Length: 157
Image (cartoon, rainbow, N blue to C red; front, side, top):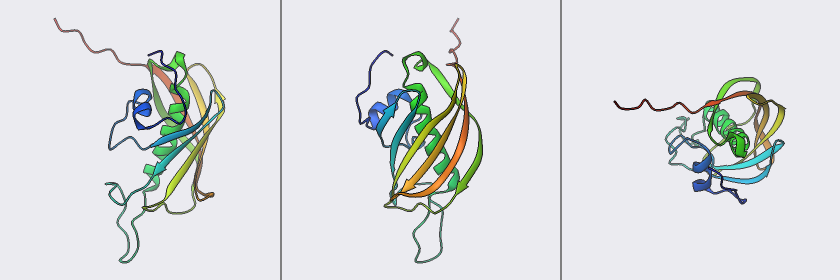
């Protein structure tokens, strides 16, 4: 895969970078990308998302914090996997630190997700991620990842 990408990246361009597919692909668009530095992505939250948490009567459901964390990780993964030398690799989410959930994310919210490189090596790294709704931080934290080869399918005999 040697294609170059033009911003903004839409859903189909994101599918060419990440192995995730609906309903597990949680990024709708990439609006900014500075290789080896930072990336900004968008997640539009709608009422028909199957993972929304039940809520009190009269209240809109909320996006579970674990799903929100995964969306931040996916935006960071796009930053790493968009580099030509990483396109034939898989990225593994190895851990999270200092994650803080500050406000619920509800249907109708547009979540702006930013990931910045904290540390980057050839096979491992750390990203700082923050998600905002209307410039209000809803989650932040540090994520560690590792790169590995795509597993080869066994050959038929």
